[in-house]
Image (cartoon, rainbow, N blue to C red; front, side):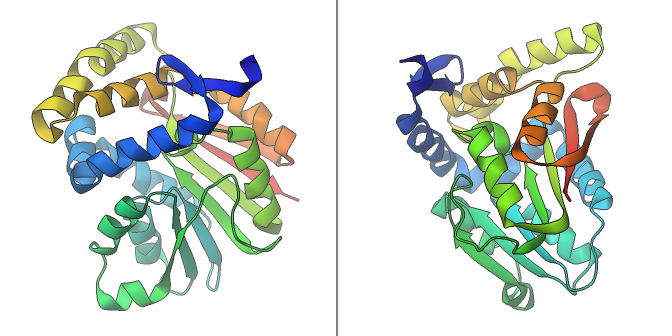
Length: 246
Protein backbone atom coordinates (compact mmCIF):
# COMPACT_ATOMS: atom_id res chain seq x y z
CA UNK A 1 0.00 0.00 0.00
CA UNK A 2 3.02 2.31 0.42
CA UNK A 3 3.00 3.10 -3.29
CA UNK A 4 -0.44 4.71 -2.78
CA UNK A 5 0.96 7.15 -0.20
CA UNK A 6 3.04 10.27 -0.73
CA UNK A 7 4.48 13.12 1.32
CA UNK A 8 2.26 16.04 2.22
CA UNK A 9 4.58 18.06 4.38
CA UNK A 10 5.47 15.84 7.33
CA UNK A 11 2.40 13.65 6.83
CA UNK A 12 1.74 10.70 4.55
CA UNK A 13 -1.49 10.96 2.61
CA UNK A 14 -2.97 9.13 -0.36
CA UNK A 15 -1.66 10.25 -3.74
CA UNK A 16 -5.16 10.96 -4.96
CA UNK A 17 -5.66 13.48 -2.13
CA UNK A 18 -2.34 15.31 -2.36
CA UNK A 19 -3.18 17.31 -5.48
CA UNK A 20 -6.43 18.53 -3.94
CA UNK A 21 -4.77 19.38 -0.61
CA UNK A 22 -1.95 21.35 -2.24
CA UNK A 23 -4.34 23.28 -4.48
CA UNK A 24 -6.53 24.13 -1.48
CA UNK A 25 -3.51 25.73 0.18
CA UNK A 26 -2.66 27.80 -2.89
CA UNK A 27 -6.27 28.95 -3.23
CA UNK A 28 -6.20 30.15 0.38
CA UNK A 29 -2.97 32.16 -0.06
CA UNK A 30 -3.43 33.31 -3.67
CA UNK A 31 -4.29 36.94 -2.89
CA UNK A 32 -1.21 37.41 -0.70
CA UNK A 33 1.13 35.05 -2.53
CA UNK A 34 3.42 37.70 -4.05
CA UNK A 35 3.58 39.72 -0.84
CA UNK A 36 4.47 36.65 1.18
CA UNK A 37 7.21 35.65 -1.26
CA UNK A 38 8.82 39.04 -0.77
CA UNK A 39 8.49 38.95 3.01
CA UNK A 40 9.68 35.37 3.55
CA UNK A 41 12.69 35.56 1.23
CA UNK A 42 13.49 39.21 2.02
CA UNK A 43 13.15 39.79 -1.72
CA UNK A 44 15.77 37.15 -2.59
CA UNK A 45 13.29 35.18 -4.71
CA UNK A 46 13.48 38.01 -7.26
CA UNK A 47 17.27 37.58 -7.48
CA UNK A 48 16.91 33.81 -7.88
CA UNK A 49 14.31 34.13 -10.62
CA UNK A 50 16.30 36.79 -12.44
CA UNK A 51 19.36 34.50 -12.41
CA UNK A 52 17.16 31.64 -13.57
CA UNK A 53 15.88 33.58 -16.57
CA UNK A 54 19.42 34.70 -17.41
CA UNK A 55 20.35 31.02 -17.76
CA UNK A 56 17.55 30.34 -20.22
CA UNK A 57 18.89 30.76 -23.73
CA UNK A 58 15.78 32.49 -25.06
CA UNK A 59 15.74 32.88 -28.83
CA UNK A 60 13.47 34.91 -31.08
CA UNK A 61 10.30 32.95 -31.97
CA UNK A 62 10.81 30.41 -29.18
CA UNK A 63 7.71 28.72 -27.82
CA UNK A 64 8.08 28.53 -24.04
CA UNK A 65 5.97 26.84 -21.38
CA UNK A 66 6.06 27.97 -17.74
CA UNK A 67 4.53 25.19 -15.62
CA UNK A 68 3.21 26.05 -12.17
CA UNK A 69 3.28 29.64 -13.35
CA UNK A 70 1.33 30.96 -10.37
CA UNK A 71 1.05 34.73 -10.47
CA UNK A 72 3.24 34.95 -13.54
CA UNK A 73 6.34 36.71 -12.24
CA UNK A 74 8.60 34.39 -14.24
CA UNK A 75 6.55 35.00 -17.40
CA UNK A 76 6.99 38.73 -16.90
CA UNK A 77 10.77 38.36 -16.62
CA UNK A 78 10.92 36.16 -19.72
CA UNK A 79 8.91 38.66 -21.79
CA UNK A 80 11.16 41.44 -20.56
CA UNK A 81 14.20 39.53 -21.79
CA UNK A 82 12.69 38.70 -25.19
CA UNK A 83 9.30 39.92 -26.37
CA UNK A 84 9.42 38.01 -29.67
CA UNK A 85 8.29 34.67 -28.28
CA UNK A 86 5.16 32.63 -27.68
CA UNK A 87 4.63 31.81 -24.02
CA UNK A 88 2.19 29.55 -22.19
CA UNK A 89 1.43 30.17 -18.53
CA UNK A 90 0.22 26.85 -17.09
CA UNK A 91 -1.17 26.34 -13.60
CA UNK A 92 -3.55 23.89 -11.96
CA UNK A 93 -4.94 26.54 -9.61
CA UNK A 94 -7.48 28.89 -11.21
CA UNK A 95 -7.32 31.38 -8.33
CA UNK A 96 -3.56 31.76 -8.69
CA UNK A 97 -3.93 32.14 -12.43
CA UNK A 98 -6.58 34.86 -12.04
CA UNK A 99 -4.35 36.74 -9.62
CA UNK A 100 -1.52 36.45 -12.13
CA UNK A 101 -3.57 37.97 -14.94
CA UNK A 102 -3.87 41.15 -12.87
CA UNK A 103 -0.10 41.61 -13.07
CA UNK A 104 -0.04 42.15 -16.85
CA UNK A 105 -1.22 45.00 -19.04
CA UNK A 106 -3.44 44.48 -22.09
CA UNK A 107 -0.53 44.25 -24.52
CA UNK A 108 1.25 41.67 -22.41
CA UNK A 109 -1.91 39.61 -21.99
CA UNK A 110 -2.15 39.30 -25.78
CA UNK A 111 1.19 37.46 -25.83
CA UNK A 112 0.35 34.94 -23.08
CA UNK A 113 -1.73 31.79 -23.31
CA UNK A 114 -3.15 30.94 -19.88
CA UNK A 115 -3.84 27.22 -19.52
CA UNK A 116 -5.42 25.51 -16.51
CA UNK A 117 -3.74 22.09 -16.46
CA UNK A 118 -1.92 19.52 -14.35
CA UNK A 119 1.83 19.13 -14.90
CA UNK A 120 1.33 15.36 -14.85
CA UNK A 121 -0.97 15.47 -17.89
CA UNK A 122 -0.41 18.45 -20.15
CA UNK A 123 -2.85 19.15 -23.02
CA UNK A 124 -0.20 19.59 -25.70
CA UNK A 125 1.08 17.58 -28.64
CA UNK A 126 4.46 15.88 -28.57
CA UNK A 127 7.41 18.09 -29.51
CA UNK A 128 5.55 21.41 -28.99
CA UNK A 129 7.98 23.60 -27.02
CA UNK A 130 11.50 24.99 -27.25
CA UNK A 131 11.87 25.62 -23.52
CA UNK A 132 10.15 24.11 -20.47
CA UNK A 133 10.57 26.13 -17.26
CA UNK A 134 9.26 25.34 -13.80
CA UNK A 135 9.94 27.47 -10.73
CA UNK A 136 9.20 26.50 -7.10
CA UNK A 137 6.50 24.10 -8.21
CA UNK A 138 8.02 20.66 -8.77
CA UNK A 139 8.02 19.76 -5.07
CA UNK A 140 4.24 20.38 -4.95
CA UNK A 141 3.48 17.90 -7.74
CA UNK A 142 2.14 14.54 -6.60
CA UNK A 143 4.05 12.43 -9.13
CA UNK A 144 7.35 14.11 -9.98
CA UNK A 145 8.45 11.26 -12.26
CA UNK A 146 5.29 11.60 -14.33
CA UNK A 147 5.70 15.38 -14.58
CA UNK A 148 9.28 14.97 -15.80
CA UNK A 149 8.17 12.47 -18.44
CA UNK A 150 5.51 14.95 -19.58
CA UNK A 151 8.13 17.70 -19.79
CA UNK A 152 10.28 15.46 -21.96
CA UNK A 153 7.32 14.51 -24.16
CA UNK A 154 6.21 18.04 -25.01
CA UNK A 155 9.70 19.41 -25.68
CA UNK A 156 11.07 19.45 -29.20
CA UNK A 157 14.24 17.46 -29.93
CA UNK A 158 17.19 19.72 -29.14
CA UNK A 159 15.19 21.68 -26.56
CA UNK A 160 15.82 22.34 -22.88
CA UNK A 161 14.23 21.74 -19.48
CA UNK A 162 14.91 24.21 -16.64
CA UNK A 163 13.88 23.88 -13.00
CA UNK A 164 14.37 26.33 -10.11
CA UNK A 165 13.58 24.79 -6.74
CA UNK A 166 14.44 24.91 -3.05
CA UNK A 167 17.33 22.73 -2.01
CA UNK A 168 19.65 22.01 0.93
CA UNK A 169 22.46 24.40 1.95
CA UNK A 170 25.90 22.90 1.54
CA UNK A 171 27.26 24.57 4.69
CA UNK A 172 26.37 22.88 7.96
CA UNK A 173 26.16 26.20 9.80
CA UNK A 174 23.91 27.81 7.19
CA UNK A 175 21.78 24.67 7.02
CA UNK A 176 21.23 24.77 10.81
CA UNK A 177 20.21 28.44 10.70
CA UNK A 178 18.01 27.80 7.67
CA UNK A 179 16.21 24.94 9.43
CA UNK A 180 15.43 27.19 12.38
CA UNK A 181 14.20 29.91 10.04
CA UNK A 182 11.91 27.49 8.18
CA UNK A 183 10.62 25.92 11.39
CA UNK A 184 9.98 29.06 13.43
CA UNK A 185 9.94 32.19 11.30
CA UNK A 186 8.12 31.11 8.12
CA UNK A 187 5.02 29.74 9.95
CA UNK A 188 4.98 32.87 12.14
CA UNK A 189 5.06 35.09 9.06
CA UNK A 190 2.28 33.04 7.52
CA UNK A 191 0.12 33.61 10.58
CA UNK A 192 1.07 37.27 10.98
CA UNK A 193 0.75 38.46 7.37
CA UNK A 194 -1.51 35.92 5.66
CA UNK A 195 -3.53 34.65 8.61
CA UNK A 196 -2.63 31.12 7.57
CA UNK A 197 0.03 29.44 9.68
CA UNK A 198 -0.77 25.94 8.38
CA UNK A 199 -0.15 26.89 4.74
CA UNK A 200 3.32 28.15 5.51
CA UNK A 201 4.07 25.22 7.78
CA UNK A 202 3.36 23.09 4.71
CA UNK A 203 5.87 25.24 2.78
CA UNK A 204 8.57 24.40 5.31
CA UNK A 205 7.70 20.70 5.30
CA UNK A 206 7.56 20.49 1.50
CA UNK A 207 11.07 21.94 1.25
CA UNK A 208 12.39 19.50 3.86
CA UNK A 209 10.96 16.47 2.02
CA UNK A 210 11.84 17.39 -1.54
CA UNK A 211 14.40 15.44 -3.52
CA UNK A 212 18.11 16.08 -3.00
CA UNK A 213 19.54 17.80 -6.13
CA UNK A 214 21.52 14.68 -7.06
CA UNK A 215 18.40 12.52 -6.85
CA UNK A 216 16.42 15.00 -8.96
CA UNK A 217 19.25 14.92 -11.48
CA UNK A 218 18.95 11.15 -11.66
CA UNK A 219 15.17 11.37 -12.09
CA UNK A 220 15.67 13.75 -15.01
CA UNK A 221 18.02 11.26 -16.64
CA UNK A 222 15.47 8.48 -16.09
CA UNK A 223 12.86 10.65 -17.84
CA UNK A 224 15.12 10.86 -20.90
CA UNK A 225 17.03 14.10 -20.42
CA UNK A 226 20.71 14.11 -21.33
CA UNK A 227 23.70 16.28 -20.37
CA UNK A 228 21.77 17.15 -17.22
CA UNK A 229 23.36 19.34 -14.55
CA UNK A 230 22.56 21.73 -11.74
CA UNK A 231 24.02 24.74 -9.96
CA UNK A 232 23.46 25.95 -6.41
CA UNK A 233 22.54 29.51 -5.46
CA UNK A 234 22.83 31.06 -2.01
CA UNK A 235 24.93 28.14 -0.72
CA UNK A 236 22.34 25.66 -1.94
CA UNK A 237 19.18 27.21 -0.50
CA UNK A 238 17.96 26.94 -4.08
CA UNK A 239 19.26 25.06 -7.09
CA UNK A 240 18.75 25.28 -10.85
CA UNK A 241 18.56 22.06 -12.85
CA UNK A 242 18.98 21.90 -16.59
CA UNK A 243 18.57 19.02 -19.03
CA UNK A 244 18.43 18.53 -22.80
CA UNK A 245 16.14 16.50 -24.98
CA UNK A 246 18.53 15.30 -27.65
